[in-house]
Length: 147
Image (cartoon, rainbow, N blue to C red; front, side, top):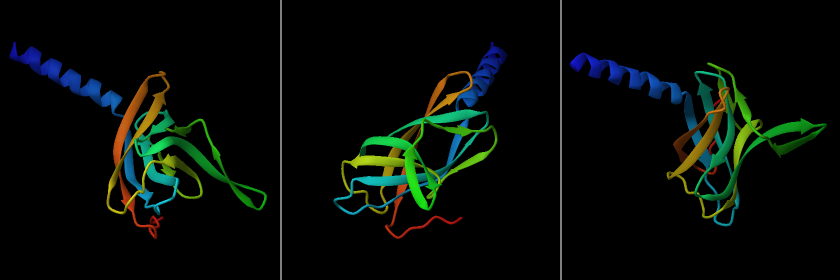
């Protein structure tokens, strides 16, 4: 009886690990001034298996979107993207000047030192969705991430 329990417990650990495939490293949001209505969120994403970031939500913003910065001639442009592919075992950086998360219609000022919940939605090759919620620290207005 005891050995059956151990086998079931071990199997459940392997099953839950299969769903927790995405890790989020070094997330941060820059603090805002009182009337500011937008902010960017930055982080590194890594998945054990190929997956795709397809959505973002947070209670501090009216909407959150995945964006990409890119050059059009001599002008830097930002545009919404439907998602970001995460190749298996590779780190994908969400940083200024590239892919990032935009928060629109902020409901309040984001202050240095607080934590903002951000829920990232991923879809795997099997079409299963996985939500990963992280507490993102708010950094000072003058903060710049190390490269």
